[in-house]
Image (cartoon, rainbow, N blue to C red; front, side, top):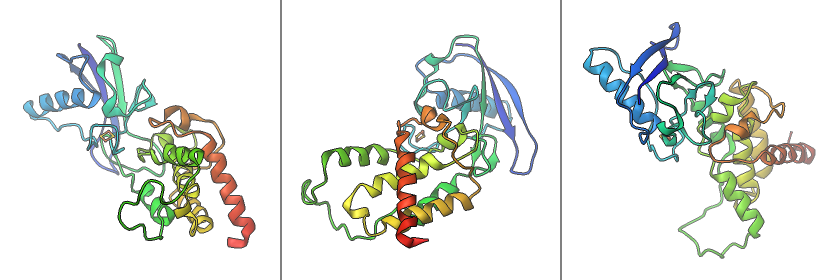
Length: 248
Ligand code: FES
């Protein structure tokens, strides 16, 4: 495949950025999107140019570090992570735009790399259990209704990539926060901090500069792990219940 990749280049947080067009050929449809960027970077390095900075780690769709906006969509045209997107999703001769996540809560560090530590601070505010869990227990030592266990697991699959924030016109982290709150509120181990958790995590979310949720649903449409929209309803119910219980 022969492509033109227009990449957002920005030398640092305070520098001006712009899209720079690079022709890239010899791309296999079986390459991942990040492997295509590797090929581009190898050629930039060989030419004595600065390679494109982009974040990645597992390249297996589980760490959440690789998100970029591809042709205006978080993680690109497929509902998967950027590292699991393959070049067969594009056509020979395509012009592909690659930009960083854009949100107030995700300041740009360089090129395609943004600071997503705000999500870590939201989790730090309440996304944990204090109950000692010891070593791995027998599967049924703590009975959990099957629907609750399944829904808790669905929400636990959130990898914190930030696509929900990048896709949201408000730059809201509500789906991310909702996944963490829903996951723990459904399980008995999450009970002791249940009320304080939701209040503290929502406070942290607001303090980090993320926008409010107006139920546009772009977050759900772009989530590579399929976190359901109903999790936001659960977050709202948990928040109301905690407020009524006099925790705030
Ligand atoms: S590099 Fe880990 S999810 Fe993409």
